[in-house]
Image 1: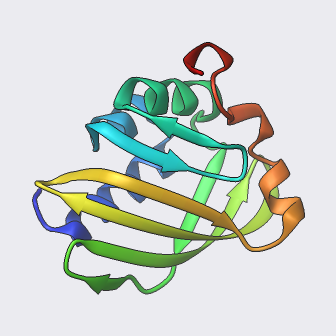
Image 2: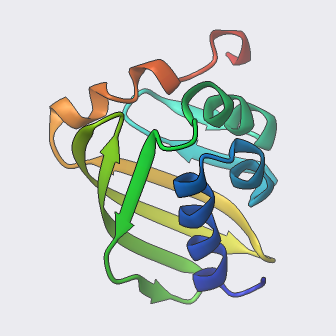
Length: 125
């Protein structure tokens, strides 16, 4: 799996299957993830976030058409998170077959609150 489209597709499949280890394995060691709660730096911090908030059946992403520009991929997502509908936009940078950066934007202020429980690890600051 080397193309940005393959990596991003694997990301959504791993999120849908509720497999935090598979999600974390897609990130580069020095990756950055930004969401409504804050910024996580490094694969270990990102892995902890997914371990704390990703369970089988908890998140059902429905990504729309991927917009690809070289190593950059943008996509709107209709997400069901713990039974709640959330509209998101994800912006990926994929280098050497790994996610180097992921910015997750909530399309309404309320949507971001769904991620409060999977936010920044206080010990990572």
